[in-house]
Length: 244
Image (tube, rainbow, N blue to C red; front, side):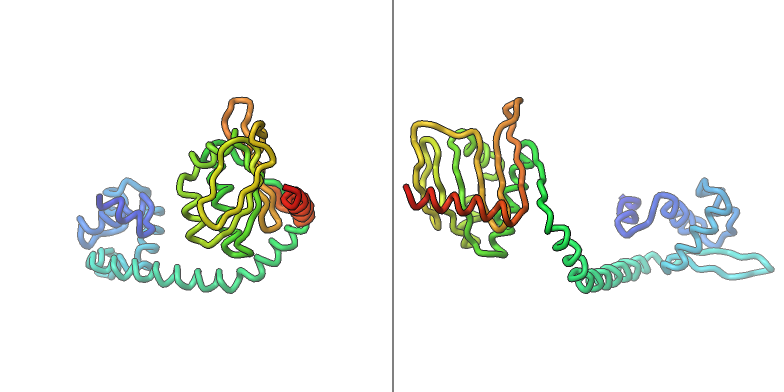
């Protein structure tokens, strides 16, 4: 219990052993602390210096000998506050660096990118990406819905439609196969109700995601990130939609 708490504030196993030894022994030499912590003397000294920097251990000299002693355990709260301050500063530095990182990402985005996903967990990643991307963009996407694949989407992300509606995202769906219903903020037309398609396609914000079944009948998917591919698929969708 104590060890797990100390790990959460950033101490490693050896630091924990040395710190707890200092608490138990009281004022002690490096050699005594090393022996009781089961680490070599050099390692014990380095760890003690680290614990001193964290404010958990201090030292003094007596009769030409150096003794180390643990500070009051209440100082651990100061260590946590110090970690929190460091995290806050790191967050601020990261926020300042994001525009530069985004610039690198945008340059890389000039080339088509394909990301592959497997099984239900991967399909949920695709659907979550759709929600996140559309929520930050036009709040509108387009679907070729396959009755053969649709059930796997709901199995992967049962609350997807509710989340979509909550975010105010609209969808136009061209259904291929039987079934399908409107749930809100959606329009649906049928290409056919007698046949199904092997692929479920989502067209959104310069991306095209396709979901199908692998040879083992488990769902697989891919997200293609490319503005030109998106525009072509969107153009074809709009043409078919207008004809139905």
